[in-house]
Image (cartoon, rainbow, N blue to C red; front, side):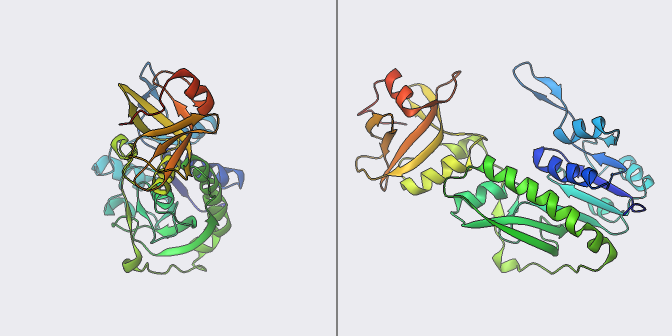
Length: 309
């Protein structure tokens, strides 16, 4: 590996776990590609990605193109003479001109047991679907969306109450471990990739805030999964009078009533009737406030008998 020229492309915390694992195992990328700095926080000041901050701290050159379709960008990557480009949650599509540059191709660290969930939000999709397991795949990249042949996968169980944020952290760590474990064999050609079964593929598109609104006409089990899947981003929510309330923890409850009607409120939860069963909201957040448990929330507002929007 010492003579292999590695490039790395990634942006958020999920990618950082793989980059950090490489560096910790003396596999130092010659350069890192990451998305341009974005406005963040209340002041909307430009903020560097986790991958960029790590790269700068470790003296690794950083490239931040807005697109990879520009000839000057393709030429800059070509000039680095990469043997392999490792990609993890980069967020910019790699055109064929870039895919063709590395001698050993482009390797993607993907948070799903491909072809189960392709696309931008495989972690949330697995929770929403009620999957019992998920995992990480190391995939040879092609021009299609997450449809390249797969070198290796490793599965983990999804916890009964596990949120997307918690599952994300476990999968990110697993991705880094899987990457450093198999990278030598992939580059040396000792590990062969297998084509995906297209008939088993599902698409996990980008999540919008509107997707996280709780629809009380649905079954409580499904809504409980939505709360888990949208924690921490964008946060499941509903309307109480004129306020948008976020829900960070919830479990199913055995109640009946008109969908959206609050049946009871105590320290054990704000229990809302659903299309099937009920949902006990256990951690809630009013606009501009900190998340609080159900008991504190119930003490602030008279909500029993109200119908939530």
